[in-house]
Each structure stands twice: as structure tokens, then as C-alpha cells.
Image (tube, rainbow, N blue to C red; front, side, top):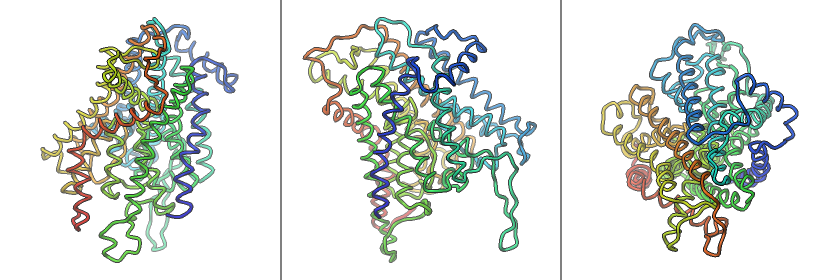
Length: 568
């Protein structure tokens, strides 16, 4: 590793932390209805939209009404994107004259973008019109990101409120999230990306004459606006099939750094929002610290696995032994490592390298990041929801050890909260394993597999881990654009999304109706180093117990076989 590599990998977490804290404080003011520097500009637009849509900003909702509003809004968005793809051939802004998208691909894509997954079983520049990309994908990138953020804000209110039947107003939260947070950040990042060479145009594809005298079609389009929100909103769906490995999406080292920073920024800021809204900033710092420890641990293993080299290349006489296949050769192997680790700890799915070409242990790290429920920062909002579910489980275990009813952030945790927390943690994992088993035991699941043996198993597990974790990245060795995979991954995406958000809102409603428990000498401190260690340990142990057998048969077995010269 070079000096620049070390600087990149050490300064990045520091810069992320420095930026996440003030953004977290800012988001707390936004959702508390406080005044911000954008209020004079945005407030008139906000009020106009409330009048236009008939929203009473002072009216609050129970958790059931909040959840119903969220689900209905999400379903309408999914349906609109589905039908938009079916009729794109007769709509404007389609210079390539693309026809209707195949029904199963259109359904998968609509659910994918509607659930903040952005799993893409198609090539964007060869399938979707400019209108579909802008009105469909980009709009859903904003909507799905906002839904995740407002869901966790409602959960935080559940801990704050006392003897209350309400957890906020979904429509008000949604408007504030888009107007005060997502739009400003996306506008800033879009302008920077355009300045660096990311294309943003409605012109048709360019036909260029090559040096050999042939012709090459170069796809362009409204790229920068979609790239910005795909990163900021942890969406991940690229305008181009190559995603952020494409020079029109990610042309310079600066854009590469900013895209990684963008995909982590809001997710890393939300624990600080939690602390600010609770008026207990140490609590937010404790949750952030647990996330950062898990992130750095995975990053360390990943870096070691990729920089130590491939034993087969070393035997072949390659000096470093490093496996550069599928890596980001413009910026260096560490940029590939940082991007891949960051995109799988969040539910983003954007890539600047092909994960199918990584070393086996690297693939296992990425699988673990997604399989535990995307809680190491995770998707915007849903990541913190998942980590809070693990924190509830941690406090339950701590209560068992000391013989006391568990408490967390001033609220007693009873049977209902425990059941909902377990549902959040294990539902995506159960579906991941069930669908993976179905895929490896049927011809429909195996017919489009790119590799055999343990690597092929990793490809299938990765697909369903990505879908159920609402991540969207792929190993890239599996052709998932089949009816079998389009329907099964769509199911995984829906369950992964709503089995996290709806139980979390149920927890919020239950906690909001309770009184605050006074702190006593018997209260377990949830801002201490011990709590952080216990929380990290619970995440690792639950993940290991759930996925150890399948990881052993997949990436770990491939690692052992690679050492004796066996590849797949």
C-alpha cells in the first residue's frame, strides 16, 4: 500500500465523522420544526405544498395511520413506475426509441426502486428512456430515501414522547425531508459532479468514429442528477450498466471520493440526529461508535484480503500477486475496497468495481454486511432502525443477566417490543436463506449461474442478501434477468423493506404510549463503552449463528480451495 492509500483509508472515516455530526444536528432541527438557514427559502414552498395537497401540518398520526400512509404512498409510487416502463415506447424524451420493458423486469425494477434497493437486472442505457430514468427512477430515489428517513424519525419520537398516541405526521415529515435535506444535498453534489465531467444532457447517444475506422455508439443522458441522489439516498441504481465504474458517472478521484462520502453521509448522521432529538448526544454517539467499529473491522479484513494478493498469481510469477481483475484501475485497489465496503454497509448498491472478482474472504465480508440486516450505517433511516432493534435485543439480554426488566432510552421494553425487534432482525434473514435454498435446488435458479462450486453458491446467496437487505449491488456472475430471479428477488425486496419499517413503527407507537422510567442506580447505562461492546458483540454473534453454515460452504470454502490451486 502506498502513502496515498493509507491517507485515503484513514482520513475518510475522520472526514465522515466531522461532516456527519453537524448534519445530524441540522436534521434534528428540521424534524423538530425548528428554524434553519434554509427556512426563509423553503418555508413558503412547504406551506404552498401543504395547501395544494390539503395537509394539516398541525395534525398528528397514530403509528397505524402513519404506517398506512407510508405504505399507500410507497405502493402508488411502485405502481406508477411499473406502468411508466410498460408505456415508455409511446412517451417523449426517448431519443433511442426504446420500447416497453418486459413485464417481469418492469415489476422487479419498480419494486426495486420503490423499496430503496435499486437492484438492476437490466442495462440502463440500453433499456430505459430518459423520461423513465428521470420521472421514474430519479423520483423514486427521492421518495424511497425520504420514506426510510421519516420512518426512523417516527421511531425516535416513540422514545421521546410520554403517554402519547401520536408519532408525527407522515406527510409533513416527507415534505421536510425532501425540501430541507435531500434536495439541497443533491443539488450541491450534482453541480460538483457536472463540474468534474459527469454528463447531464437530453441529447441522444453519440456515434463516434474509431481509430480503426469503425463506429461506436456512446450513450449519454441526464446522468449527474441521478448519480447524486443514488448516492445521497443510498439508492445505488446507476444510469449506466457499469454504474460508478463508468467514466461518465465517476470520472475523477474527487468524484470517486465524494460518491463514497455521499452514500454514507446521511446514514452516518442519523445517530447524531437521534442524540440531538433525545437531548442525549452521548446516546447518539454510542450508536454511531458501534456502527463505526463494525465498519472499520470489515474494512480492515477486506483491505488485508485484497492487498495480500492471490496465491495463484504469486505462483505464476506476478510480482505483487494482487488480483486486479474487475478493480477500479484508474484510482487504485484501495478505492475499490473503500467503495465496495461502503456500498454494502449501506443499502446503496452503487459499485465502482465488480464484486464477483474479489477474493473469497472479501466477498464474505460484503455478504456479512448485508446479511445482518444492513445495520452498519445501513440505508438512510432503515439502518438506524435495524441497529436500534439490535440495541433492544442487547438490553433484553442485559436484563436477563441482572434479573431486571430491560430499559432503553428511558422506556421499559416489554414482550411486544421484543417480538417486533426480533421480526426486524430475522425476517429478512429467513427469507434470504429460504429463497437461496430454492434457487440452488431448482433448474430455474441454476440455469443462469455463471460459476459452479462454492463461488456459484456465493453468487446466489449474494443476490438474495442484496435483495432482502435492500442493497442492490450484485456479484455480477449471475444473470438475474429471468422470470424466476425477477419475481423471487422482488419478493425479497418487499419483505426486507416492510418487515423492517412496519414493526419499527409499531414499536414507536407502543413506546410513545408509555411513561418515561426515571434513571436509578440499577439502570444499565446505554452510553457506556460496555454497552457499545455488547451491541457490537450481539450483531456479530447473531450474524455468525445465522449464516455460519452457508458462509462456510460458500466464500470460506472457496478461500481454502484457492490456497491449493482450485478455482471456479
